[in-house]
Length: 186
Image (tube, rainbow, N blue to C red; front, side, top):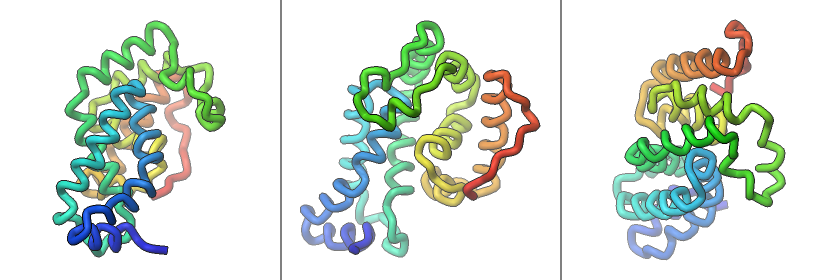
């Protein structure tokens, strides 16, 4: 199976080759963004993520076989530029308990929905944007500590400390015991 790095390398002379990267990761990036903002904004940001990646493909580190952490990093940076809109979405969710995935027919989205969305939204609102990015890349992006560090261009220790602070804050907002320990993917 061809790596993302090989597709990106090929795209330097044949732009169409980049479509293999898009096709391989568009659903994951889109799903991550839809968990953070409305479908319309997520669709726009997904398109912007791949347009930005295409424009910056010459700077991609071809030693990295998978472009997914790089794409998550681009998506997170674009999303950070929309923080005010994201905060309004979370405030609405906290007030009216309407999940942005509520209209989704995707069975996975149905499974992911639980009864504590408003409390979770309030917990997410209480995080700094940096802590929220790390927590959501871990929880919704299913990235390891190393992949989050790569995506956000952070030292792994910073990822660990931000994730720890975010978990503690969200647990407290959900009324869960703060001392609860979780298995890490890092």
